Image (tube, rainbow, N blue to C red; front, side, top):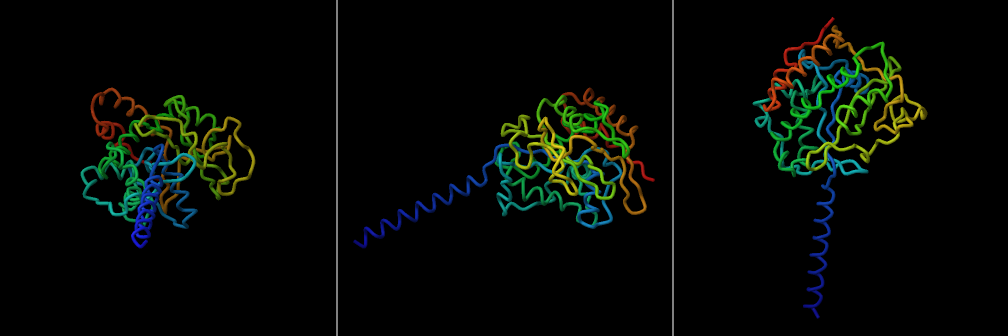
Length: 310
């Protein structure tokens, strides 16, 4: 009898262990990678208003959209996150290309360590993405972000569709959504930030999605998107929903692609001329860097362009 009871207990223990292991594995499963780029001017405004911090770090050569992160995501939910807490961030892994990370994946939060954003993104998202061989190390994860921010250049994409940074000009969601869709052939997710001082919705983030083979796919099904409107943005109202059901949280019209932000005694300005020069340089790099790595694009395209500060 004791032997039978012991056997049953052993079976129950093994079953519980297997169920736990299965639940852990399922909790780390994901369908798409969300590659999120942010407009530094809007991110700076958001930082100043939401965190009550008067300052941002906008490096002089940070003249493009920058990477926020690459986020493995299960459709219809958020995450997984922090898939391997023992896989710590090591700055030594990225030192050879840290200068490019400062430009294209920089931390604009003044007062935080330069590496804080990279550490956060690696621990929360990179350790989950790393199950793919192409993203299977800290170096590969950040390399892929630098590669994609060159390949999916949003300053050039928007400029070619006559969408320029400007504090006094507004665009419709359809204009922005169509510019991205016409260029890359997929549905993106477009997020705005409601500027409480100007009472305007500012273009903030553009998200592109990739499947597990790193092929561009529609972002349909990622959580928090669907009908686009202003309801889930600070200061917004539950109205003005977009009939096209573009993804994100922007209103259908009145979206400002801001060109300036005040940081301390300086005003950083992204001029129309800078957008044009960026786009011409990006086009030239497509010719000169054929067959070469993304590093060629990164160095040739816009590394020499600088903000205008007033």
